[in-house]
Length: 76
Image (tube, rainbow, N blue to C red):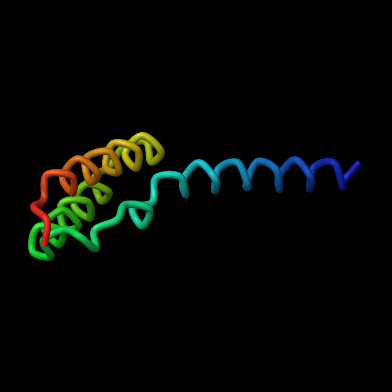
């Protein structure tokens, strides 16, 4: 009986971790963007994720805002 609960916990944990990791900002390329602008977007992202609320919704919204911010940065 116990292995079933362990398996359920492991599957649940992996689902939660994969959902959170899909909103990481390291998948957004800033290497060809003006560094000052990219840093401002990163600061905005940091401020955004520190807000309270449901974590998955906050991460998704902050990721989207960061992506939009970076897209407006001028090229190097």
